Image (cartoon, rainbow, N blue to C red; front, side, top):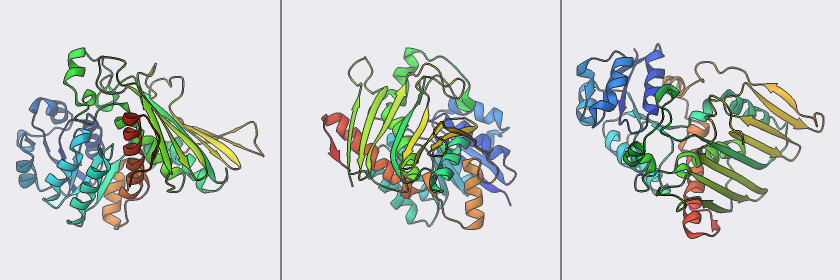
Amino acid sequence: MALRIAGINFDHFHMGDLLRMAHDHPEAEIVGIADEEISRMFSARSNFDLSPEQVFTDFEACLETTKPDLVFLCPAAARHAEWVEKVAAFGVHVIMEKPFAASLAEADRMVAAMKTTGKQLAINWPLFWCRSHRKAYEVIRAGTIGDVAEVHFYDGNRGPLWHGADKIEKEPTEAEKDASWFYSAEEGGGSLQDYLGYGTTLGTWFNGGQKPIEVMAMWDVGKSSLEVDEHSITVARYAAGLSKFETRWGTFSDPWTHQPQPKCGFVVKGTEGTVSSYDYDEFITVQTAGWPEGERVEAPELFAPKSNPVEYMIDSLQSGSPIEGPLSVETSRIGQQIVDTAFASAEQGRALALME
């Protein structure tokens, strides 16, 4: 039988991407969608040929009527814990769209809510599905560049309102910015909250789960009329050295169309070499003593059941295997620890020990 799937809360436009993956999966069925604003569901209803009876403005009615096995959640960052607690009561598995949460305390609330149900919680980081980053991880774990000593991350886009689901481009108005949770401090907006978790979570995955000792961050809040940052730089001190994570709304171009400069992605330095892995590339570049000039290594195309989060979740549920890597709450929690510490550091203007 097909896995029954519902999409709840359309604050983040990535809901459309997740629903498309479910729609295209032979063992998945979209049984319902719900959001308080019916207009935000028009595209999904049309794109996935949903009937009026499958569209709800009351999430409880949606869950009670459609009885899904798996729920996609895409609320504003500051409401992740609230929404996991709401749907956990219905005994469903959950894919939460990134980031993990707006704070470590909220992330822990999410884990606690799901633990009581015995159901799975996965955090979807879309960059995990870049073939380049998956190949970089393989090379790192094989020991090709030795032990990880530094992770350098630079990522972002022109801005969260410059595109919608399926990366359809648009140009936002000031009124749209004013109305969007992305630009609200209270709702967990800002480039640091939006993108830093990518770097710290995948960075934790690259470095085998190591935690930093100390974190220091700066952002550009206060330099414009916006109440959130559009640029942040975080430095994390590990036992082995320093790593840097930089987030940017306002890149010259979006990396999925034309890579901006600096290029979006990762550069990892090891004790015996380096690897660069840029978003959406079909290759990585590996530098070692044997290849000091750098060797381009093909990053193979990703195949089912590990080419997107819906495939991965369905396979994990069917096989009984645990959620691993960046999608796991264990790895994502370390990433959230670094994000929380960076946020507090930027606010206080000083380096801080990693928050527990």
